Length: 294
Image 1 (cartoon, rainbow, N blue to C red):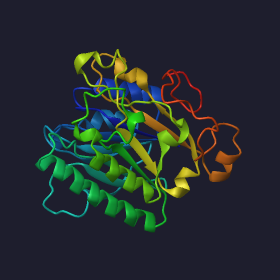
Image 2: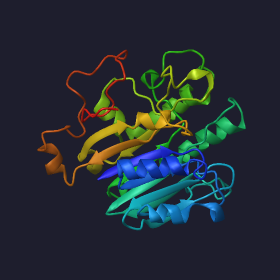
Image 3: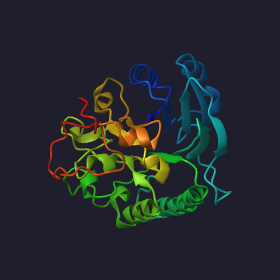
Image 4: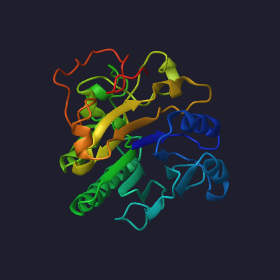
């Protein structure tokens, strides 16, 4: 089972990019962020024609999240993150797909900081922590995928001081992410790529894509039972370099049909770090734990 997350950064503007990627990559489940579309303007027909059922939590101009499922209909569980009835921003949606609970999220950016936007980011993180804990206690397979707007460690941002004041790298943001993971979640991409520098976002400004001056902001967190099935993980970097691209690239994981199959596959070992992690300065030429070309 292939599950992906993709901050599309305006679904209508980048619909051709999205449809081409869906045809090529054939993910079974896709979590989309930053739809930036009113509900009545969503490209529902195009997504259906591409072979995907969908559930949506749209918001005009800003935010917006969706979950797509190939050749099936996601069963909507909730729209919106619980814990604050006054929060009307479309940043979370949750659905059941083939026995897995999928949470798609677009965590607040938090800039400028300090200030109200950063306070909102940390409060949203606190609500996510509470909800994620409840999901773990239910002992069901869960993936929480999306744009977390956090570069968790120094490995998740290119060597620079230019972002030091940004909300994406503040100690409070990183501590909130680390606290979430410590509940018992597995950061899938980091789990299979050890200490490799690997990025998912490259700002449009200052030639950052050609310079590979990126950050890892898009994460898939797996509950313990799904972590045992983790079979592969990669960033589809080439999508970022295409005309009209989002400033994010799709990130995907593969889950084996069962923990037994994953353990005996002879391919990527699930939920284990490489025996000899690559150094922090290792080049980014290889992005998939299955040794696929980028």
